[in-house]
Length: 134
Image (cartoon, one colour):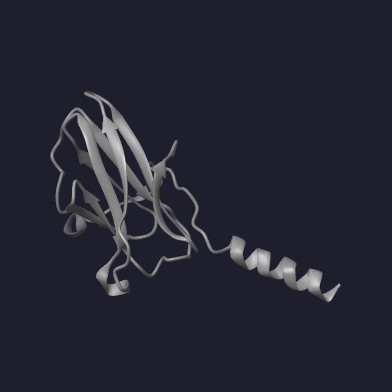
């Protein structure tokens, strides 16, 4: 019985060690002093939202487009990037203040006039970038 209780408690703790998606409409915009590139208006956009939640909230996430630092996100923030149509490589890693860390990269294709949404999430396995409906 005691083992079952310990296992249930451990499962509850680990379930709390992840972030939750937040709608781009409800997220706070990344402040201008943390937007570095791709801020121009184009008819194709990449909307990136960093999940909300306490896990990893003390560390910002650096976001890259084609290897260029585009923004630094805090928990629950959103930014919009103007892109030319085509395939891009987007990446994310923890800020230097949090020890840096491994860069996670993904490809994203943007068509003319399209808005593509991605989310930055954090789990015990680290940072990730994935498609989102939010």
